[in-house]
Image 1 (cartoon, rainbow, N blue to C red):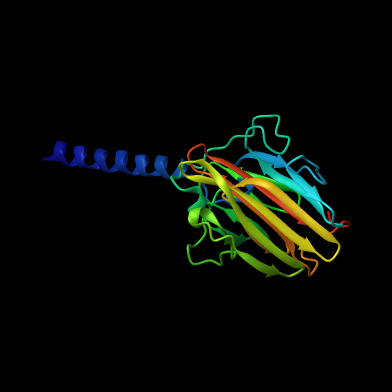
Image 2 (cartoon, rainbow, N blue to C red; image 1 turned 135 degrees about the horizontal axis):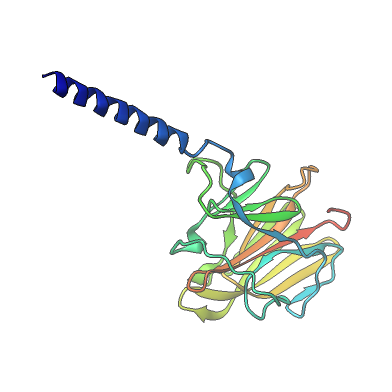
Length: 220
């Protein structure tokens, strides 16, 4: 009986030591915005390209571009979201910036891509998008500084179309040719009280995306 009691006490000690070891190696609860970033992308400001005509006073920036042979892309900026439908993913307000697909964090001057989904509620505010998709509706609408139209051009692949996007400002027009699955939205990212305009395109099969920003000349 005495030996049995000693064995039980030994098992309790081992169990406690294991529990202590497990707690020692638990991952601390930290802010993933500071610890989880694996890729950072800088912006290309005030670009010009054969696919863009611009007679307005606005400047056009490439925030991100992974489309091969499009908008001057030279290096291989490829990322994998590991989702089946990129065009279904919302763009949400998040900690002073914009978050796409819970992993692509857009700030004033750079993009951070995270290896894990950021902890954000599905009920958090999404940005309203204007889109054309494959319905060939060719929408026309007004935005804060002018008018926009998105026109169907043709099929890119099974899950993507080409769109021509035209933005009309008081000072002139911007036309972006052959943008895949074009989405338009506005957001005041630099918090100056005036909206910038954004164009976003994505292709599911190849996990390719492009983000463009249209801004006032003195911004950024």
